[in-house]
Image (tube, helix red, strand yellow):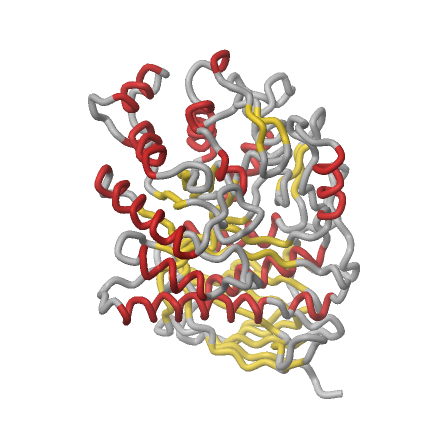
Length: 504
């Protein structure tokens, strides 16, 4: 059998674009235990004076998440923001129809703003365009962002918040093409509503950026016609269009699972092409960018979740969407992040959905500790070392086929050049499930650079997972490599995540 190998040329002149740090964003929805018993749990031994769990905050700060989408998700399409602000004793409980739970509103907009500040994150605020509309969006925007002598700005001040929150990024609804959505709309209905809402919001605060709602999944029958039709209404008034997609391995075919980023790449390219078609049709000079504001692996707990919502509705903070991630999920998350970096010229924001307990890298026990899931580590490495200029990967790799994909590269890789720190980082995945691959990187354009650190995730067991008892999946420092005359060589283990940091 021929040797499996890949060669990569890393050149500082081959630039894709500056990586927008917001591509390492995340998401907190009022769903399951994301908020209650997740980021917020008064009375827990690790809770601070505001009820925020400090053990969770430390793990979030370690990830360095620049922006967090809130409060949904499906939850936002029946969200009455007024119930989530002001004195807690005056807040109304509401039934959340999206997840069939009871929302106490003990934790609301003000609490999230305070928590985000402690986490070092900006807010991406989603507005309800399902059961509500333009007037409510303007009221919320005034409450959050304006320092005027007017009703909702005064209301915020009466709640003890003198300075505006200054939220810069706003989502115009959520997954509005989904029949499961409260206030589901056709493309024509949503396009008109979103355009008029965007116009009004930018009249009130011209400094904000707006995200138009794309299809809820690449598999939706509405895709990509939804994008075309809605953008023809919203293009002049918005700055981004959203993409959502989740990946699973329900068939237990690891080889094909790792090839699914081929589909992801095609999805991103199709949305870019659709945006550019509308740009051409409108004779516009503006280029619309992408916000992939929901993505992750999600499939492990779906059946149990559906049963829980059907048989035991209206609970407060039930265990929902608590996927326990295994080793192969971490590898796919790494592959997704590499794909995002390859599209750094147009993909400016992304939100790992979600952050705590709900399909999340961080898990908590109600009466115990917090811990890192397997997917925590590729996200941590990308967020930490993937800031700078994404470099166009020039890679030749041996190929393989899977059940549903052909010409799948053994090695997927990209490099990010941080000029400020004078270092370059290569992110690479060997997604061959059978064989190790010899990997060679030509870094001669970075004269005098040597290896500062080589981090790897390697495991023979694709189904091994972490828990509060310990981490069976964690990175280690790898020393089995050579770097001579500007050429780096190593053997990348099958099914491995590799981070090679180089500098002077």
